[in-house]
Amino acid sequence: MGDRFAEPGSSLGIRHPVSLQQRPLLADIGDVARLTMTQAVAKLAEEQLTVTDQHGRPLEVSPAGAEGTRLHATADRLRLGASDEVTARVHGDDLRPWVVRLEVEQLEYHTADLARVTFRARGIKLDEQHRQAERTALGGHARLVAISCQDVVDGDVIDGSIVDVSTNGVALRTQRRLRVGDRLTFTGRFFATVIEADVRVARVNESGGMVLAGCTFVEISPEERRKLRTVTAERPAGEAGAATFTVLQELAAARLERERNASFWRRLLRRSA
Image (spheres, rainbow, N blue to C red):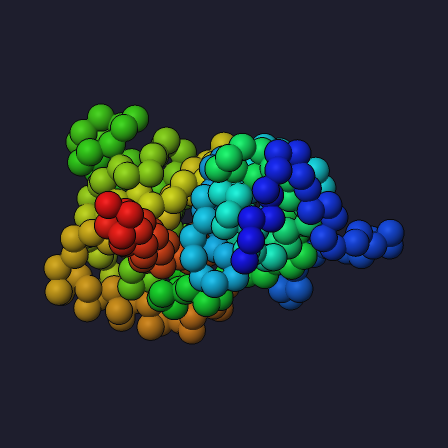
């Protein structure tokens, strides 16, 4: 394929005509909280992101702004010249993971290496594919002790409530500030069962003056693991009320995705060396 941006200032123009009649831009997901495509695009525009092209390869994108369902950005011009569509992952305010399908609507030459691109969101759905563990919505009390935290002194005790639990991790709600990467000891009471483990904070979201933290188990004994399996088997996965925050989705999958992306770039650098 030739260079589609051979001359500075060249443009492919609008590649997908815009319909004058707008339809509701909501995910078809039943009774759970909806994230509109406009909201998803606004979140994508907040920071540097990695999208996946139609060949399954990661592509670094630098957002420049959002306008409705359109995302304006810059990215590698040769890679964009070979792509008509990409997908991006984004988390809603309740930390549910979503997949957004973005069409390349317009391309313009920017520099020798970069192109300006306008993506148009064309679809959104809950990310079911990457769920690594079934979740159980079980309330309970949590007691955490800081081991290595950014904003909490080592040894400080943090009280919280358990919102969600799986064999991979636990979701907590607390008034104390936690940061991604914080490590703590966790003691959780599920009815008559007490489980102890070391956890690391993997995702954080603040809502209504409370902190929702998704934590992964980083050190747990075989006996505690056995008790955990018993707890998560007490209620069918997914049986939860409307207020349940499914914070545990994608914790393990996100880690695997980062490892795959890092492996891809290592291979690329070796080939170019």
